[in-house]
Amino acid sequence: MHSFTTERLLIRLLIPEDEDFYAYQYTDPKMMRIIGTPLSEKEARAAFHRALKANSGEKKTVMTWAIVDKASNEIIGTQALSWLAPKHQVKPSNQPITQVEIGIMLATKANGKLLPDESTAGVMEYGFKYLNIDRVNAFYSRINRATKRILDKLGYVLDEALQDPEGNVRYQYAERENWQQSVITKVIN
Image (tube, rainbow, N blue to C red):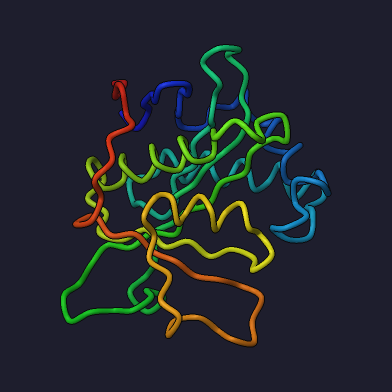
C-alpha cells in the first residue's frame, strides 16, 4: 500500500531507480542551502540505501516517498515521516501518542506551483488516516519563510512557548483531531 495520488502528484515509496535523483538532492548545495551541509556522493547513496531498507522493514522508523509529477511522470522530490521515540516527542502528554517528524525536499523546477503544499498535505493525510499518527512535527530554519507559509496554510500550530528564542530552528505541529483537509484522490495497493 503506502502509495497514493493527489490532484497533480503520485506519492510512492522510493524504488531503486530513484537513487540518482536522491543522491542529486542531497549533494546539491542549492537544494541543501536551508537544510544543512551537502553530503558527499558516497554519503548520499548510503543514505538512499538506508531509506530503501527502512521502507521495507517491519518496524516503522522512517518512511520515504518519491514525489512524482503526474503530468511529466518525473520525480521532483522526496518526502519522509520519521517516527519519534517517546523520549524525543515534543510536548508529551499523559497519554501515549504516535508522533512523527515530516520532511520534504523538492527540486527547484517544482517551485512556485504550490506542489509542496499539496505533497505535504497528502503525506499528512495519509499518516493520519492510514498510519494512525496522532501528531506531525515540523522543524525548519527560521529563515525558511516558504516552509512557514505552507505549515500555516495547513493548520500547523506555532506555540511560542515551545520555541528556542536563541536558536535558528522553528517548530510547529499538526494533530489528527484537527485535520480537516482531503487531498488524496486514490490510495494504490
